[in-house]
Length: 381
Image 1 (spheres, one colour):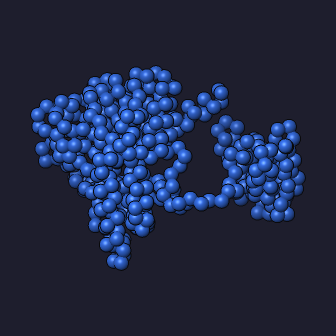
Image 2 (cartoon, helix red, strand yellow; image 1 turned 180 degrees about the horizontal axis):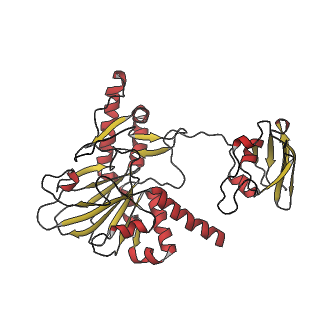
Image 3 (tube, one colour; image 1 turned 120 degrees about the vertical axis):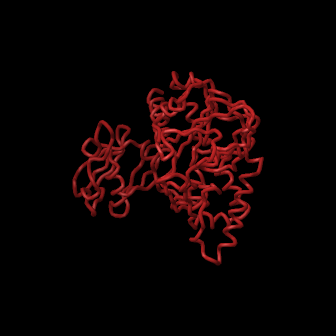
């Protein structure tokens, strides 16, 4: 069976019947806007050379035919024929019925609970530093699960920057380019004490929030102080299954977050605890009891139910069946997607020493590095 193309809606769209029997419709304006000829896209970087205003509002297709493995479409009033890769069109088709439940996650994400303990994404520092395939595998795990560990790294001040250099750049904040995580007298942040910390996302009071956090161990002989991570997206899924209305309230209304613990710093953001994209995709969680300010955007009629959902989300996050726990040794580090995975710490004693260094980075750098390696691999295949 061959590919067949019909003009529909007086040439304002086409209907393509693929060899496997499936059908897809494409609008003329979409096809023209997404052309890949050299007059439309820069050959070097693929960036678009025309604006939508350069495309006639009355655009139509006057001729369409498959030939030599391509689809050739003639656009009017340009009277211009442009060729398209059928596979690219099939992969980018939008003629599908969407029946997604609010809170859905993408196919490149796998949510998890304590059952992941035996399958934590782990990379060897030396291997990911010298091998592109090892780096790809580790970054893939971070993208899929929202966190990952590195072992075998150098035990030296500032080694965490070498982790960030693997895929991107450090994001500097009021805490500096990096921060020390060890007990302080009169600390500006509870992270600098030996107290246990509830699982949380960092810096919810920033907008945009730092999307990645790296914690690197230099000393850890103290009793206790184990690190824990919780998949916030799995917690949101549990809440949605148990209490759909509560889930809806935490996605509909904004909470307030603030921090002013240092001189000259007054940070505030207004975002929902569970953030959805317009199409219902779950794209973020902000959960940090220490930094949550007075919640004022929820109407009186919904406030009691909102707090009940907030409480239940915290209970789910605190459930040990949701937690993956590990203790870092010197030279080991872990990275979390701060828009998805919450991290916590068990309390530790004053005996021995515990010294971690932390910094923030941005997820776009990690995803770009991984995407570039994957693209290179596909081209080589």
